[in-house]
Length: 67
Length: 240
Image (cartoon, one colour):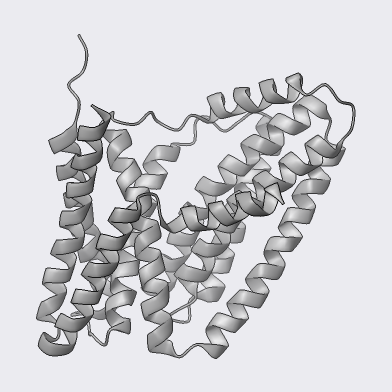
C-alpha cells in the first residue's frame, strides 16, 4: 500500500512541483488555444513569451521564499 | 531524419539521467547486502515497465486522435519539462543544492546498515521501488517524446540505449556515477522537453509552426535565454 501511494505521488510529482505554477501554465495554454484559434500563428509568439515569463517569475518567487 | 535524431537524443539524455539515479540505488543495495535480491527486484521492475510501455504506447498511438494526442502529450511534456527547468534554474543560481549521486549513495547505504534484519526482502523492495519509480520517468519521457510524430521507435531505442550504457558503466566501475554531469543534463533535457512540449501542444491547438520541426530549435534558444535570465536575476552572491 505504501509502495502504491509512493508510486502515485511520484506520478503526480512528474508534472507538478508547485500547484500554483502548474495552474498558471495550464491557464496560459488555455489562453493560447483561444488566441491561436482566433489569430493563428502570431499568437504563438505571445504563448512562448508568457511561458518563458512564468519561468522567470516563479524562479524569482521561490528564491525570495528561500531567502 | 533530423526529427528522428532529435527524438532519439531527447529520449537518450532524459533516460540517462533517470537511469543514473536508479543505478545509484541498485549499487548501494547490491554492494551492501549482496546482489541476488536487488537484481531480482530490478528485473521485476524492468518487466513491469516494459508491460507499461507496450500497453500505454500502443493504446496512445492507435486509439487517440492525432490532434488530441499532440495537445495532451504536449501539455504533459510542457509541465514535465518546465518542472525540470525550474529546478535547474534554482540549482544553477545556488538557491537549491545540486543533486549529488555520491551523497544519495551514502544515504542509502547508511539506511541499509541500520536495518537490523537478515531478510533479503529489504534489498528486493528497495531495488524494485527505485528502478520502478525512476523507470516511470523514463517510460513517460519515451512515450511522450516518441508518441507523436511517428517517433516512438527512435524514442524507445534512445531510452533503451541510455539504460544499457548507464548499466554497463555501473557494472564496470561499481560505484555511483558521480561524474555524470546530472544537473547539466537535467538542464539540457528540461529545455528540450519544454520546447518539444510547446511545439506539440500548439500543433494540437491547430497552429502551424513556421519551418515546421526546425522551429523547436528556436524555442529551445528562447527557453534557454529565459532560464539564464532567471538565473542572473536570482543568483545568490558568493560568500567571501
